Length: 573
Image (cartoon, rainbow, N blue to C red; front, side, top):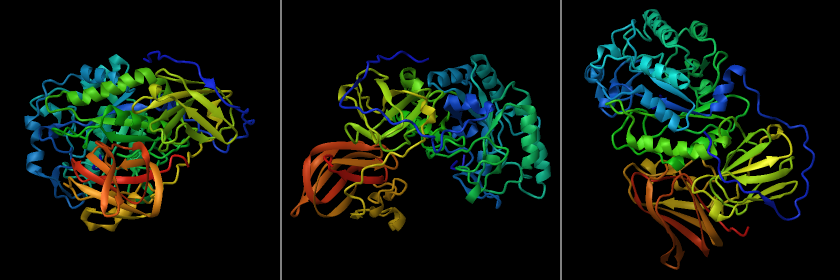
């Protein structure tokens, strides 16, 4: 990487209330989800895969490949581990607790529908006993063929298996030199082994490092598809910077694009897959901060709601086991999918594009609303040209729907809402796939465009200034210096304004551990709300406050607090 069984839920019938007028006849949609090639159909329906980054570097607990202090001028890298140390770690690598069948069982328990293993990363080490070089698992104390064992276990369980393969090789002295042709012979030899010796390989996940791409792409693609005609190949063999970025570009021979560590934007015309770590780096890190079940479920729902997949990464420990904390989160996601999987598997994104409310998916005549935040109560969505016949909450409880030509309102009592994702299924009169995707407008915050200042700004850089926390753009952020444990953000609304709701989006979730909201009364700051963790999106209603100056006072954080947006609203408006 660049840095990189559904259980039946209690379903209660919906009561439509008010004068719900019939929806107008559906016009010809401006755009509907594009049909995918048959070869990609299973992958798109799977929606959720498990990525595994592993190798001798797990002995150090640092990032795979990028922690190698590579001095090659073609791809310089100032990692913390000297080359002579990094490149000899395999001589100590003996993960005797590796159990391929257990890895597959963990993937199944998580609800993932395919797996991808780093057969070879940028450091050039191969997890199979390749005949092309000596730098491979067969020459470690472990000696066993990790790729072979995992492929066999996956095939036995009916789990599609794929390989991550780095065409760039920071270990091979011929790569990207005037001897690159010699390297290409070894590269193609490795690909032939991986695609010919292990049965059906469902996916090939190339990577890139921002350097040149002398990989003889046309012949490489030809080799891959001749060896595995039904294989699905990502976009990174062709990727460079700029217009050919991995986050957006699909070359003529690739199948999908690959946003990294970010959730892709809504795109139901071109296949895409977000790759994201469960922790903070791709390979195993001791005492790493890992995402919660809630975080992971929301990421998965946002990916599916954007019509993309999620490839979620874990890094096994040096003994060969996946860390118990990671397993616990994966099993928690699997438990959620056992109840709500019908809203993920086999769906397309939309028709309501992801937003602060959450996301939506669709299948047949059903739209599934994934409601993360009840910023409005009831939830207000744009009208759709299809009549809602009934609704159900997948985890039990009642839902009420009010529909008009230009608005759809969904009400779920608090007792039936789930802590991180309330899934409401709307059964329509007609095919949900015919509906064009629509944006869900967000309410304009009272803080948008207001004057803001902060106690700390990352390296005093304007692109991380306090004003970026109130600019109405989730893609910008106010950031503080690394190691900052306390900070404040102050907003001047220009005049006394009434508000009774705050919404705070943390760019790096759960760094903030304790905070208070205050308003300025004369010369005294008075606290009107307190909290602990913020997370991806924190929302709270409180007794109305009328004030001109408001402060978010962060009392404790694990690292430099970083906010995408700080918003205030008057819920009555």
